[in-house]
Amino acid sequence: MVGESGSQHHQFLIPKVVEQLSPQNGHHVLDIGCGQGVLAPHIAKKKATYTGIDISPTLIKQARKHHGTKGRFIVGNAHDLRSIPELTAGTYNSAVFLLSIQDMRYPEKAIISAGWALKPGGTLVLCMLHPAFRIPRQSGWGFDEKRKLIYRRIDSYLSRLDVPLRKDYQTKETLTRSYHRPVGFYVNALSSRNIHTTGFEELPSPKSNNEVLSKPERRALCEFPLFLIITAKKA
Image (cartoon, rainbow, N blue to C red; front, side, top):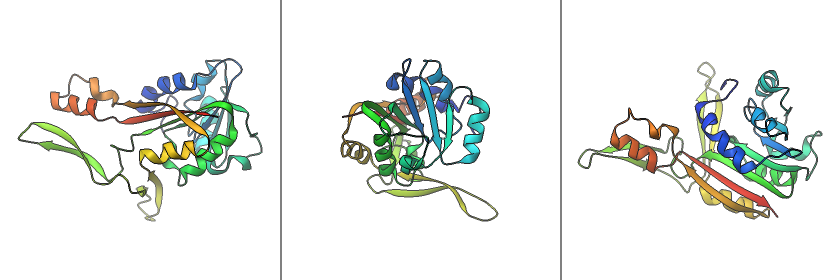
């Protein structure tokens, strides 16, 4: 659970995501993998209509509790939005995956579903941990003692990975996973559905401006982006 206003990462990213979505009065915005619905009040503030979809009934319950007056929240599978009775093809001005697409086993299916929901000319925003630099269990920081330099270590990149992140310590069952794909996968998945990339923004950690950090730490955080935002438009 991330709380009513989201995590520190949400608070950093949401203004940038809203800028790309450009919601306006009368627009319909679809949040795919909405979690606890932390984006909803920011869309409602722009007088746009918000719909959030998530496969977890627990998260949708929390979203309705905290943001039920700001939008509509529906339990549903991002891989198959067509199966959700409340949704209609080609009705959304914009759609977004806010730190959610890397939690989806079949991201290409999720992108196809998003394209189905969008109007022609609609905007799709993919906001994620940067696939080139933040690969779960396959990347990390190192320190070059001779050069006094912090570097980013990448052990794997092009391989598609299914990474278990959290387990139930009693049953040993994997509870959450991350699905790594290289950057090119997302660009190609979009273009294959006639959704063409219009923006590509790489963002450093919000901690990069922390004056308490050493010079090598600040430099490393500024040089290696933490997030990637891909903006695309449906033909």
